[in-house]
Image 1 (cartoon, chains in turn orange, yellow):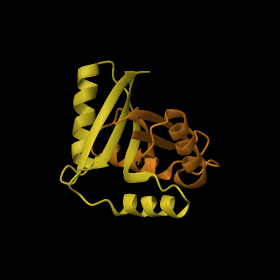
Image 2 (image 1 turned 30 degrees about the vertical axis):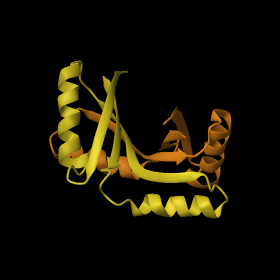
Image 3 (image 1 turned 30 degrees about the horizontal axis):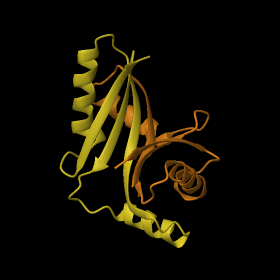
Image 4 (image 1 turned 45 degrees about the horizontal axis):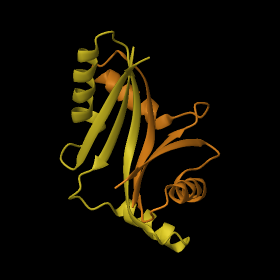
Length: 82
Length: 82
């Protein structure tokens, strides 16, 4: 079985209002040296297969079709056998 | 400057309804070999300091106080000089 750790972030060119809100909150709490916060999603997906290449292709498919929005989001993932 | 990549997940013992919904959607799309999905948050925070230890302590503080909910969530982070 393979476990995919998927990191989804907004593209650099896309405004991140959630990140801006977190930055403001951190400043209000006194953490003035925080310059920038980007908020994304982190998914851990267990795929039951023994073929690493098939797992990789499947995770890519799932990201493009459901997990991420390729228009405004970038994703990367790591696969590890578990 | 240091950049922290923060991974926040629900504790294993905590039910993840969002993950269950994603699992069901993936099954409905034909990805029957997906066993388990956990959904968490991924934050990238830029901290303007030259002291790695101070940065580490600060990120820990920020996670405990604002970014994560230590009662139901676990977090890990990586620091890299940028």
